Figure 1 (tube, rainbow, N blue to C red):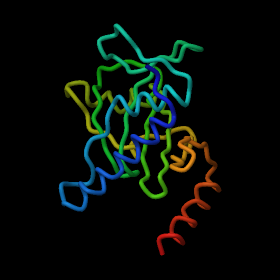
Figure 2 (figure 1 turned 90 degrees about the vertical axis):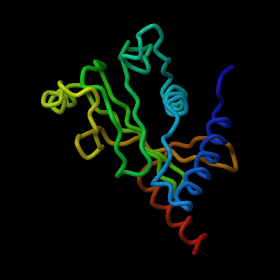
Figure 3 (figure 1 turned 180 degrees about the horizontal axis):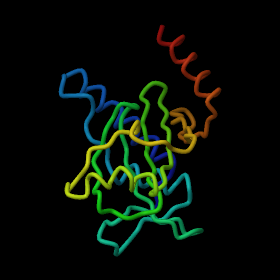
Figure 4 (figure 1 turned 90 degrees about the horizontal axis):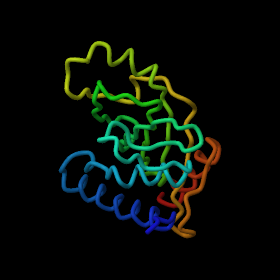
Amino acid sequence: MGVSQADLVKYYYQYKDLILLHQKLEFGKAPRSSEGFTETLCCNLFNLKRATDVKRKYDLIDPATDAKIEVKATIETYGSTTINPTSVFDHLYWVTFLLIPDSFTIRKIDYAELTEFFKSRRHQKRSNITLSNFKSSEPSIFFFCKETQKIIPQTLTDQLEHIKRYVKKAG
């Protein structure tokens, strides 16, 4: 069964509710996001395929270029994640969820940049990383639209306008 954009939007809003409850009850910043959700989101948006039979060396494959892709996700820009420094892939897609204004960014980081970071961490089983550790491509920005059940690409200007509307509506 394929996962539609409507399914992804529905999942996001359920996950957002869980995050807000998590924060209200002071359980921490956010529960860990589902790898299945973020990987499926990238597959849906960029026509990627899940990697199979690779013993989780990487998550996705770009069928057009055969590029191997690792996917990591955080809530808000300050989030961190862990990564295996012995992993080998072509690109890291870093998904950052922004609860206000119900959007997310995906930044593409080339493996070559990660190798410098990994050099000092080869002895570690997993390394803690944050997005600020790396340069990356300009982010691809998307908005989860509850009304249309679609994921809508945005520009930075669109994003700012959406935030203004959100603040005005909440205010």
